[in-house]
Amino acid sequence: MSELMWAGSLSHNGLTGLGGNGDFAVHQLGHELSAMFDTAHGASLATVWESWALHVWAAKPSRFARYARNVWGLENGDETALILAGIRATGDFFRSIGMPTSFTANQDIGVQEEKTLKDLALGCTFGRTRTIGTFQVLGEEDILAIYRDANTR
Image: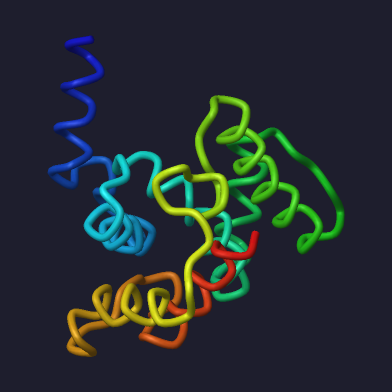
């Protein structure tokens, strides 16, 4: 347990991303869900991860292909199929450990009205004063699209 806590502290302080660009958009998307619905942070991340990945993978396909190969051991000659299989494998893993992968699967959230989705997107941008993400910079409309997808998945 102490090693897990130590690894978490190092990651939280930026050491695991040293030398590379990470993308913490999912973290911000999840924060809005946790704030509005009081859902656990890990559950909020799993709730939006697939929707986020499907929205942004085309901006950094090589990164998502490498993820599919290195994390899931997938191989496929077609890069797009490989990427989508990697995204699907991640969602399947989350489901296998009982994590929610959509608003409907998250008992704290459930299906939401369009106004709530817009409020989430507005909150995530701090009232349209910031964007999130580095793989693909996400503004309010992108964030809304991700929340819409997670809402109907």
